[in-house]
Image (cartoon, rainbow, N blue to C red; front, side, top):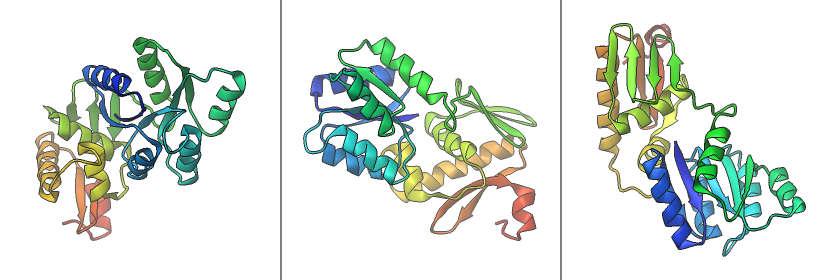
Length: 233
Protein backbone atom coordinates (compact mmCIF):
# COMPACT_ATOMS: atom_id res chain seq x y z
CA UNK A 1 0.00 0.00 0.00
CA UNK A 2 1.27 3.48 -0.90
CA UNK A 3 0.19 6.35 1.34
CA UNK A 4 0.38 10.10 0.74
CA UNK A 5 1.02 12.21 3.85
CA UNK A 6 -0.34 15.74 3.44
CA UNK A 7 0.78 17.62 6.54
CA UNK A 8 2.41 21.05 7.05
CA UNK A 9 4.13 20.11 10.33
CA UNK A 10 7.60 18.91 9.24
CA UNK A 11 8.34 17.09 12.52
CA UNK A 12 5.02 15.24 12.45
CA UNK A 13 5.60 14.32 8.79
CA UNK A 14 8.89 12.71 9.71
CA UNK A 15 7.38 10.78 12.62
CA UNK A 16 4.51 9.44 10.50
CA UNK A 17 6.77 8.58 7.57
CA UNK A 18 9.25 6.66 9.75
CA UNK A 19 6.51 4.73 11.56
CA UNK A 20 4.75 3.81 8.32
CA UNK A 21 8.05 2.58 6.90
CA UNK A 22 8.61 0.35 9.94
CA UNK A 23 5.11 -1.06 9.46
CA UNK A 24 5.82 -1.93 5.82
CA UNK A 25 4.01 0.95 4.10
CA UNK A 26 5.43 3.07 1.28
CA UNK A 27 4.72 6.77 1.76
CA UNK A 28 5.38 10.18 0.24
CA UNK A 29 5.16 13.60 1.89
CA UNK A 30 3.85 16.98 0.79
CA UNK A 31 3.33 20.01 3.03
CA UNK A 32 0.98 22.38 1.22
CA UNK A 33 -2.24 22.28 -0.73
CA UNK A 34 -0.72 22.99 -4.15
CA UNK A 35 1.75 20.11 -3.91
CA UNK A 36 -1.01 17.86 -2.61
CA UNK A 37 -3.08 18.39 -5.75
CA UNK A 38 -0.04 17.55 -7.91
CA UNK A 39 0.62 14.30 -6.04
CA UNK A 40 -3.05 13.31 -5.93
CA UNK A 41 -3.40 13.89 -9.67
CA UNK A 42 -0.91 11.04 -10.21
CA UNK A 43 -3.58 8.65 -8.85
CA UNK A 44 -0.76 6.60 -7.34
CA UNK A 45 -2.03 6.25 -3.77
CA UNK A 46 -4.24 3.79 -1.95
CA UNK A 47 -4.75 6.14 0.99
CA UNK A 48 -4.23 9.84 1.78
CA UNK A 49 -3.61 11.21 5.30
CA UNK A 50 -4.96 14.71 4.77
CA UNK A 51 -4.42 17.60 7.17
CA UNK A 52 -7.45 19.90 7.27
CA UNK A 53 -5.59 23.22 7.65
CA UNK A 54 -2.90 23.62 4.99
CA UNK A 55 -1.02 26.50 3.34
CA UNK A 56 -2.38 27.28 -0.11
CA UNK A 57 -5.50 25.15 -0.17
CA UNK A 58 -7.78 23.81 2.55
CA UNK A 59 -7.83 20.05 3.04
CA UNK A 60 -11.58 19.88 2.56
CA UNK A 61 -11.27 21.59 -0.83
CA UNK A 62 -8.55 19.12 -1.82
CA UNK A 63 -10.84 16.25 -0.84
CA UNK A 64 -13.73 17.65 -2.86
CA UNK A 65 -11.39 18.02 -5.83
CA UNK A 66 -10.28 14.38 -5.49
CA UNK A 67 -13.81 13.06 -5.54
CA UNK A 68 -14.81 15.33 -8.42
CA UNK A 69 -11.90 13.89 -10.42
CA UNK A 70 -13.06 10.37 -9.65
CA UNK A 71 -9.99 9.54 -7.53
CA UNK A 72 -11.19 6.90 -5.10
CA UNK A 73 -8.19 6.60 -2.78
CA UNK A 74 -9.21 6.29 0.85
CA UNK A 75 -8.85 9.51 2.86
CA UNK A 76 -8.33 9.99 6.59
CA UNK A 77 -8.59 13.65 7.60
CA UNK A 78 -6.25 14.63 10.43
CA UNK A 79 -6.92 17.95 12.14
CA UNK A 80 -7.08 19.90 15.37
CA UNK A 81 -10.65 20.93 14.51
CA UNK A 82 -12.77 18.62 16.63
CA UNK A 83 -16.25 20.10 16.50
CA UNK A 84 -19.15 17.90 15.39
CA UNK A 85 -19.79 20.25 12.48
CA UNK A 86 -16.16 19.98 11.36
CA UNK A 87 -16.30 16.19 11.37
CA UNK A 88 -19.59 16.14 9.47
CA UNK A 89 -18.21 18.54 6.86
CA UNK A 90 -15.14 16.36 6.32
CA UNK A 91 -17.09 13.12 6.06
CA UNK A 92 -19.68 14.69 3.76
CA UNK A 93 -16.87 15.90 1.49
CA UNK A 94 -15.86 12.27 0.94
CA UNK A 95 -13.50 11.32 3.77
CA UNK A 96 -13.45 7.72 5.02
CA UNK A 97 -12.42 8.68 8.55
CA UNK A 98 -11.62 11.70 10.72
CA UNK A 99 -8.84 11.73 13.30
CA UNK A 100 -8.40 14.62 15.75
CA UNK A 101 -4.91 15.86 16.72
CA UNK A 102 -3.03 15.10 18.80
CA UNK A 103 -3.43 11.39 18.15
CA UNK A 104 -1.58 8.23 19.10
CA UNK A 105 0.38 6.58 16.27
CA UNK A 106 -1.04 3.18 17.18
CA UNK A 107 -4.54 4.57 16.72
CA UNK A 108 -3.57 6.05 13.35
CA UNK A 109 -2.28 2.66 12.22
CA UNK A 110 -5.48 0.99 13.42
CA UNK A 111 -7.54 3.53 11.44
CA UNK A 112 -5.42 2.83 8.33
CA UNK A 113 -5.96 -0.90 8.69
CA UNK A 114 -9.69 -0.45 9.22
CA UNK A 115 -10.14 1.86 6.23
CA UNK A 116 -8.06 -0.35 3.94
CA UNK A 117 -10.35 -3.32 4.67
CA UNK A 118 -13.39 -1.55 3.26
CA UNK A 119 -14.66 -2.38 -0.23
CA UNK A 120 -13.59 -1.96 -2.91
CA UNK A 121 -9.99 -1.82 -1.72
CA UNK A 122 -9.92 -4.86 0.55
CA UNK A 123 -6.46 -5.75 1.83
CA UNK A 124 -6.88 -9.49 2.18
CA UNK A 125 -3.87 -11.58 3.17
CA UNK A 126 -4.20 -13.45 -0.14
CA UNK A 127 -5.21 -11.99 -3.49
CA UNK A 128 -6.48 -14.58 -5.96
CA UNK A 129 -6.85 -14.54 -9.75
CA UNK A 130 -7.57 -17.73 -11.71
CA UNK A 131 -4.83 -20.29 -10.81
CA UNK A 132 -2.54 -17.97 -8.82
CA UNK A 133 -2.65 -16.30 -5.43
CA UNK A 134 -0.42 -13.59 -4.00
CA UNK A 135 0.28 -13.70 -0.28
CA UNK A 136 0.77 -10.09 0.82
CA UNK A 137 2.18 -11.05 4.19
CA UNK A 138 5.28 -12.82 2.88
CA UNK A 139 5.33 -11.59 -0.75
CA UNK A 140 4.86 -15.07 -2.18
CA UNK A 141 3.33 -16.01 -5.53
CA UNK A 142 1.56 -19.37 -5.42
CA UNK A 143 0.54 -21.39 -8.47
CA UNK A 144 -0.22 -24.96 -9.62
CA UNK A 145 3.40 -26.06 -9.19
CA UNK A 146 4.37 -24.45 -5.92
CA UNK A 147 5.42 -21.00 -4.76
CA UNK A 148 8.03 -18.36 -5.48
CA UNK A 149 9.11 -15.55 -3.17
CA UNK A 150 9.00 -12.11 -4.76
CA UNK A 151 11.13 -9.07 -4.11
CA UNK A 152 9.38 -6.05 -2.61
CA UNK A 153 9.10 -4.32 -6.00
CA UNK A 154 7.92 -7.48 -7.72
CA UNK A 155 5.28 -7.97 -5.03
CA UNK A 156 4.10 -4.34 -5.27
CA UNK A 157 3.79 -4.60 -9.05
CA UNK A 158 2.04 -7.97 -8.94
CA UNK A 159 -0.37 -6.69 -6.28
CA UNK A 160 -1.54 -3.92 -8.63
CA UNK A 161 -2.00 -6.36 -11.51
CA UNK A 162 -3.81 -9.03 -9.46
CA UNK A 163 -6.15 -6.52 -7.82
CA UNK A 164 -7.24 -5.28 -11.25
CA UNK A 165 -6.92 -8.15 -13.78
CA UNK A 166 -8.05 -7.78 -17.39
CA UNK A 167 -7.45 -4.05 -17.11
CA UNK A 168 -4.81 -2.12 -19.05
CA UNK A 169 -2.39 -0.57 -16.57
CA UNK A 170 -0.58 2.36 -18.16
CA UNK A 171 3.18 2.46 -17.81
CA UNK A 172 3.31 5.87 -16.12
CA UNK A 173 0.73 4.83 -13.53
CA UNK A 174 2.58 1.60 -12.70
CA UNK A 175 5.84 3.49 -12.23
CA UNK A 176 4.14 6.10 -10.03
CA UNK A 177 2.48 3.49 -7.83
CA UNK A 178 5.51 1.22 -7.41
CA UNK A 179 8.41 3.70 -7.39
CA UNK A 180 6.57 6.92 -6.45
CA UNK A 181 5.49 9.96 -8.50
CA UNK A 182 8.82 11.78 -8.10
CA UNK A 183 11.11 8.79 -8.62
CA UNK A 184 13.70 9.01 -11.41
CA UNK A 185 12.96 5.65 -13.01
CA UNK A 186 13.71 4.67 -16.60
CA UNK A 187 11.05 2.80 -18.55
CA UNK A 188 13.45 -0.10 -18.87
CA UNK A 189 13.25 -0.72 -15.12
CA UNK A 190 9.53 -1.42 -15.39
CA UNK A 191 10.14 -3.74 -18.36
CA UNK A 192 12.75 -5.63 -16.34
CA UNK A 193 10.35 -6.22 -13.46
CA UNK A 194 7.61 -7.35 -15.84
CA UNK A 195 10.14 -9.83 -17.25
CA UNK A 196 10.91 -11.08 -13.74
CA UNK A 197 7.20 -11.57 -12.98
CA UNK A 198 6.67 -13.48 -16.22
CA UNK A 199 9.47 -15.83 -15.17
CA UNK A 200 7.83 -16.29 -11.76
CA UNK A 201 4.49 -17.15 -13.40
CA UNK A 202 6.16 -19.73 -15.60
CA UNK A 203 8.04 -21.17 -12.62
CA UNK A 204 4.77 -21.94 -10.83
CA UNK A 205 3.24 -23.27 -14.09
CA UNK A 206 0.46 -20.68 -14.17
CA UNK A 207 -1.80 -20.09 -17.17
CA UNK A 208 -1.92 -16.41 -16.23
CA UNK A 209 0.12 -14.10 -18.44
CA UNK A 210 1.14 -10.45 -18.49
CA UNK A 211 0.24 -9.10 -21.91
CA UNK A 212 1.99 -6.07 -23.41
CA UNK A 213 0.09 -3.26 -25.07
CA UNK A 214 3.01 -1.71 -26.92
CA UNK A 215 3.73 1.84 -25.90
CA UNK A 216 0.83 1.80 -23.44
CA UNK A 217 1.19 -0.69 -20.60
CA UNK A 218 0.38 -4.17 -19.36
CA UNK A 219 -2.62 -6.40 -18.63
CA UNK A 220 -2.84 -9.48 -16.41
CA UNK A 221 -5.10 -12.13 -17.94
CA UNK A 222 -5.54 -15.81 -18.71
CA UNK A 223 -3.62 -17.14 -21.69
CA UNK A 224 -6.74 -18.71 -23.20
CA UNK A 225 -8.52 -15.35 -23.19
CA UNK A 226 -5.63 -13.74 -24.98
CA UNK A 227 -5.46 -16.53 -27.56
CA UNK A 228 -9.17 -16.33 -28.24
CA UNK A 229 -8.72 -12.72 -29.26
CA UNK A 230 -5.69 -13.53 -31.34
CA UNK A 231 -3.56 -11.08 -29.39
CA UNK A 232 -1.09 -13.36 -27.63
CA UNK A 233 2.45 -12.20 -28.13
